[in-house]
Image (cartoon, rainbow over all chains, first blue to last red; front, side, top):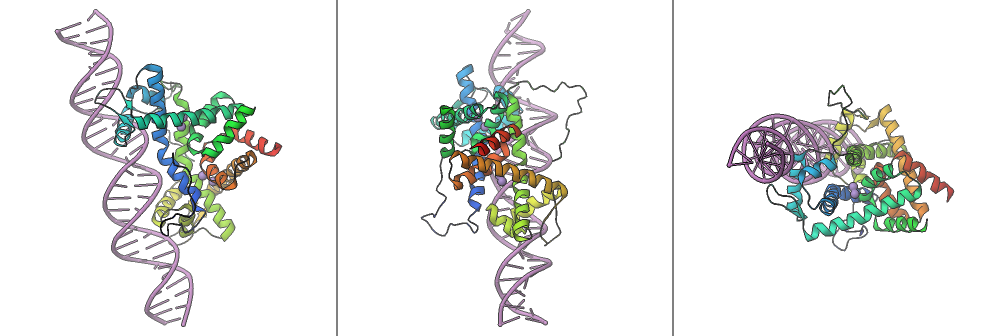
Length: 150
Length: 150
DNA sequence: GCAGAATGTTAGCCTTGTCTAACTTTATGT
DNA sequence: ACATAAAGTTAGACAAGGCTAACATTCTGC
Ligand SMILES: [Mn+2]
Ligand SMILES: [Mn+2]
Ligand SMILES: [Mn+2]
Ligand SMILES: [Mn+2]
């Protein structure tokens, strides 16, 4: 994950017309990666729990149809996060595994934080699934500290 | 926000194959509304601060090009959140105003919470801009309580 | 060892969200 | 007032992410 360098780019006049646009730019960037993050995290989990990650199981866990999964997996393969062979289950590349690990860590920290705040586990899981993609490393550190200290 | 009811199922045979899919379903739902929420919140802010909301200013604040804004505004009009006339600035409908208010409230609570946790305002603003769409009412209540109590 | 079930892929449709290029309308300044 | 600048729209491209229908492959239970 690339973290911030929102400020003056060394290169040419890259600065946005409105300086406050930075936050939205960052959010759009995060949104572009959300789905890939959910996929690799889930694939890693399936491989760990079931020994393999099959499209039918990915689809069931995400609540989407299998062709949707198939198409998305093609994209992830194109992007180098997974490898796959026709009619076979899915594997993570080195890069995919690294991303999955990072995502799992974020997910865990956010989840533990919400629970330690007093949220019920079910709502915590739901909120964590969405929030995890929008939490900076700094915030994550504060969440972790809070959860540990409580 | 209007929902479609795609399935004519009379019987409540609605339970998903995998129960854990619920979290992802919810997140996808939230993702569908993110952009509209950012728009109406921003439009309300522009109207408040500048007296009117013009596409060029919306674009500058969001960091996207004007035609992107124009097309999205058409969608928001179609959905009943705004009204607009060609070459004129944008207005919120009653529904749009209600949504904007709700979004502003969430944004404020999340932002104040992050800052009260110890995050710097700039990062807090960025994270809040993304997180706000993925925070349940329950979590919001806990955030508000924490920020007030600290 | 095969028929039927389960799984997976492909094709094609739709919507959203982004862009650029070309055009139109409105605002501005002298 | 009118030429030019600024703002806005329209058209069209493209990718992502969802779906269904049709087809292909693999698994399984007899
Ligand atoms: Mn997630
Ligand atoms: Mn997750
Ligand atoms: Mn936002
Ligand atoms: Mn906001």
